[in-house]
Structures are given as structure tokens and as C-alpha cells.
Image (cartoon, rainbow, N blue to C red):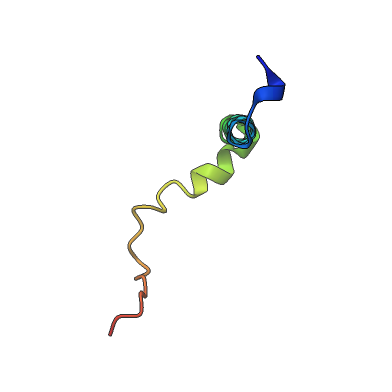
Length: 59
């Protein structure tokens, strides 16, 4: 790999790929950690909960 011939777009792509990789590892660690199970289980049905209407500003 010729580092000196890399353009700005190449460097941005490298940093973006590394950032996404680290962020995915963090999210997987956070979600799959047994200590966080209760926190995520309490929000399990949040998507299906239609009790609170969403106000989008329409009259």
C-alpha cells in the first residue's frame, strides 16, 4: 500500500470505514451484553405501542 499516493478521498474513506467498524463493535457489545438485557427488554414493545398518538402538526 502506497500511503504517500493516497488522495484526500482515500483517507476519508479509510477513516470512515474504521469509524463504522469501531461503532459497530461498540453497538454489538452494548446490545449483546447480559447486563443490558433488562434495559432493552423494557423497550421491547415500543415500536408496537400505539397508545400515545404522534402529533405531526396537522389539524
